[in-house]
Length: 132
Image (cartoon, rainbow, N blue to C red; front, side, top):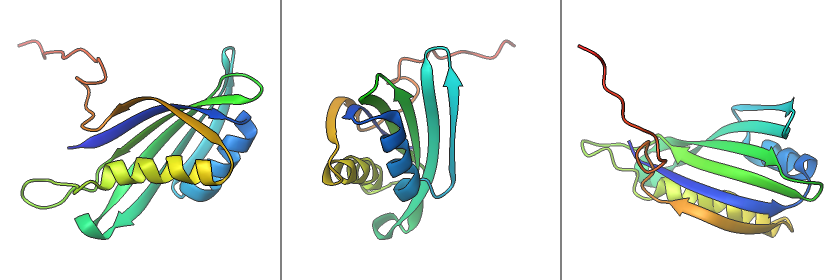
């Protein structure tokens, strides 16, 4: 499975950013919680891509970083098709679509990290083995 990851800072309040993303990209699920470190939200969406003849999914994690700054993690995944399980660039397009949409709505977006072929290893997760 292929995925595309983007970490970014958005100039805008938590309320503004979560409301915008939930309205335009949260067609599956949208929820938020208060934590001791600040508010967080999880937004799930999906979008059909003709090039892969499949729906790609998006996971958006929103973290409050101050009164006028919000941190986002965008992960687009699933939606690959065919024997080779190719997404034909749909995941990168989905993430870019969200970034561009935020910018077109007047938010300033600073990409701090982007991983085109994202998986658990590129995320820094440790591989574990099942005991025999």
